[in-house]
Structure formats: structure tokens, C-alpha cells
Image 1 (tube, one colour):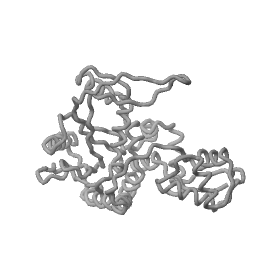
Image 2 (tube, rainbow, N blue to C red):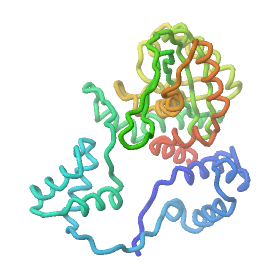
Image 3 (cartoon, rainbow, N blue to C red):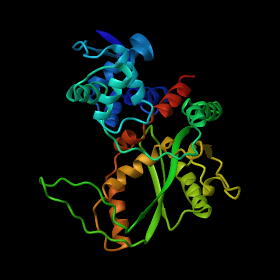
Image 4 (cartoon, rainbow, N blue to C red):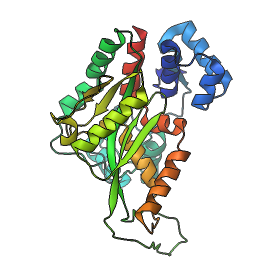
Length: 332
């Protein structure tokens, strides 16, 4: 029986809530995380008996002896983690033959890669050629997040970590995959109308709270209006606000409210901001829908936000590097 560590975001969220005093009752923690109270109790018992390492430890039962040697598996795992990937499972068969002189059956390689290594064909996420990987790596190591948290937590303030961004929504139909019978080509009515509006939003990954306002376009004036409105919603609380380096965000004309502290993520790195995944989650519900007017679209968006739960926001926005920074900041 082997032992390894597994970074379970729900466990770290639980510890953050308890250590920061946000939520103390096990029943309430279970309710917010959609977990049984017995599960929360078991997690806390493991944490109290052995600390964070015991809490994050998982046991793995031994499986059947692999048909390829460990060095080949390790090399394949490394190649899969580069982000460049393979174009097909057949390409992996060819790679194993070239790199390790292994003659592997397609089905064997498919089972290994898909089920044991957990890798599958994915649509690549576009990445700017201007992105600085070193800056991205340093940001994920929490230095900027921790510095901001430590500075303001030390002053005895109630500090929340939030992520902000904007997204455009319009009458142009978003299309997506649908399931049809074999041999049946799906069709969907579409509009090419360019009328649109922008949603300015901010989310808190730890609690799932979300704030959003509609504006006609993206610019510094409307961003200022959103900041002022968000500041009012925060009341006595302070927020460290992770933002990208869009011109509207970094303009010298922006007057930052006293209770909002900006934290700039590296340029050309939208994947670092978890609110991007919330936009994707919401737009998925709009695919193949046809809207007769911009007001019809507004009503549908409002319906989606009304149905959005804290648990859903936590699920799409709990990035490990953010949770780690918040947990360690609360541990000081």
C-alpha cells in the first residue's frame, strides 16, 4: 500500500474557514462544501492527529504489474505534462517505439494513458507567445499573494481575496456540440447581430461569493464605477483584488478605493485568473440559444446568476496556488 499527498481544495477551504474564524461549526462547513458532517469530522480528526500532511495523505492500492517499465512510464508522464502533448493515442504508440524501442498495442497504450495516467484528448487553450513563463511560475509560488495578505492581515483587517475581470455578451449565437443519432448532422439557428454589453465581475474563491454589474463597454470610466460599487458592497471589509494588466485596469486615472488593494497578475496570462472559468461556465449555458433582443439576453443572464450557487463558484475558482497562499497566510 503506497502513500501520497493529494491537494484536495475542499480540505484547504475547510482549514481556512476554521483558522480565519469564518465558519466554525462542522455541520455548517459540511453544508457549504456539500459534504456529509461525518466527512468533515473525519478530516478534522486526521488533521489533529498528524497535521496538514496527514490530512492530505491518500492511500493507493497496488495494481497489476505494468506492461511497460517504470522509466518509460515516467518519461511519458513528463512528456504529457509539458503542455505540448500528443495529437493522438497512435502518436504515443509511435513515441514509445522511437524513444524506448517498445512495441505496444494501441489498446494497451490507450488504457494506460486514459485511465492510469488520466490523460485524454483536449482542445488546447490558446496561450500568448508573449507570455513570460518565469513570471507566471513566480506568481503561482504565491510571493505576491502572500506579501499582500501578510501586510494587510497584520494590520488586523478583515481581508478577502478576490479575482476580477470582464466578459462581453451579445446577440451573436454561441454554438456548441449536441448529441444526435448516428449519421445525423446537427443544425442550430444562429444570429450574427453584434449588439452586446459587458459584465464586470469579481469572485471570492474561498466563499463562492460573486459580484457583478453590467456596463455598455470596457474602459477605465466604467471600471472606476465598478470599483466604487464593489467598495460599497465590501463595507468595512478589505479586498485584495487580482486583476490582469488591461489598459482600463492600470490607467493612472483610476482612483482605487481605500478598501481595495490591486494585485496585478503577469501580462498575457488570463489562465491565472479563476473568474475566467466562471465566464466559461456561464457561457456554456448560452450555447445554441437564440435571443430575440438584447433585453431577452439580459434576462437570461440574470436568471443564470440567480441560479448560481456558492458551491459552483468555489468549484470552478478554487485554484491550488490561491488556496495554498490563503492557508499559509492564515497559519501565521
